[in-house]
Amino acid sequence: MESLDAGSVMDMEWTAADEAQVRAQARAQGLAVLAVHALQPADAPTRAAPRWKPTDLAWWCKELHTLVSAGMTAVEALETLQAQSLLRGTSDARSQIQAALVADLYRGLPLSQAMANEAGFPPVLVASVRAAERTSALSGALEDYLRYHEVLDQLRRRVISAAMYPLLVASVGFIVSVFLMVVVMPKFLGFLEGTRASQAPITSMLFAFSHWLQSNGILAAGLGLMAAAGLAWNWRAGNVGRALLWLGRQIPPLARTMWAFEMTQLYQSLALLYRGGYPIEEAVGICQASSQTRHAPIADSLERCQQALLRGQGLSRAFADAGLTDGVSVRLLAVGERSGGVHGILQAIAQRHAQIVADFVDRAMRIVEPLLLLLVATLVGSVVVLMYLPIFDIATGLPS
Image (cartoon, rainbow, N blue to C red; front, side, top):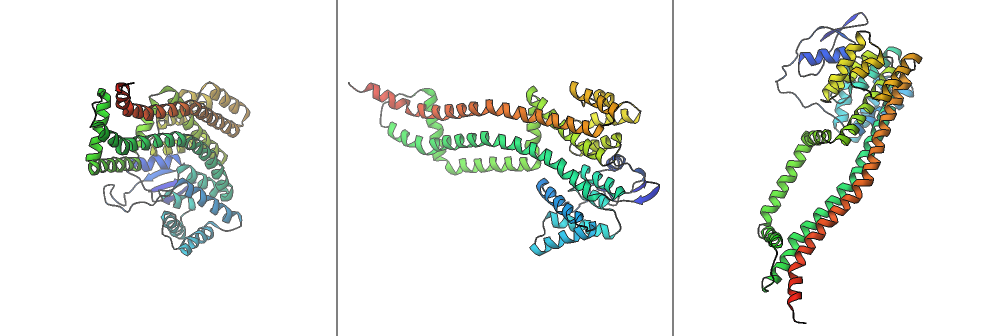
């Protein structure tokens, strides 16, 4: 791709599905596209792009920040990190990405462009590094990104840790129920076969299912393994996550909380980019490209907001018309416009939405945890009671 940046023509390589996506990403980073040439057809077989986990990316940014702050250049810092990976004898995604970055830097590409050529770096980080290259403040850009990542990571960890206890309780209840059905109930069934104890229809169905599980153990285990494998595959493919997101958006309280989480991420990103020197309309464009890549529902709203800002509309009005504010946020943005403290206002809005998510999680767990315990206890208790009903019938039939 040939682009114009600060009056000079540059040749860049981008990884994208089509020409439209390349142009959108370039516009979001403030580049004027002159021409786009496909180096490889989109349907041609390609090497799988290495990716790393967000925790690995945060660790990598911390290490790079430490080395750059100590006085190393970007090339020296990356070579040091790559040498560390080689000493460990690993060839994981981090090592592959670092090798590609070093190779691109030796070809004369700036660090931001080398990072943009790799699939493992979020657009917000790439844009922050690109802004830092104009002022030679790479260490500060990495520090700002780490602060941004820490805020979002703390919120994610809070949500995940809150979900772990219900999952643990549900798993224990499932295991106990399976144990009763597979091990305990067949013994009761063998004892009851020699008696004349009557069985309720639901008890008979439960005993029949338990007998089927014992008689077809291999088949039942195979079906269970297939179900677990299918669930794991769909989880890795993102289908489970998309289904949960769709389900969450159908429940109003969850939909409002998910929107607040999206707003937290959006305003944190805008604050990071604005602090890095990007005009607000360009920062919105970068967030829009990132949201489009993640198929986030706010991508269209961000595009409308950017177009309104480019037409000269005020900040608070553009965000409100695009549906990216609530009653408090729009007033805060108006204050930021008047006072000139846009960065602080963006940060305050992000913190406000993060607190909304945290408060919802705390309230939800206070309700969900006892209800889930009650549900699991009811399920296990019902199985035990149904199993013992024939015994009670026998006991009542004995002469006193």
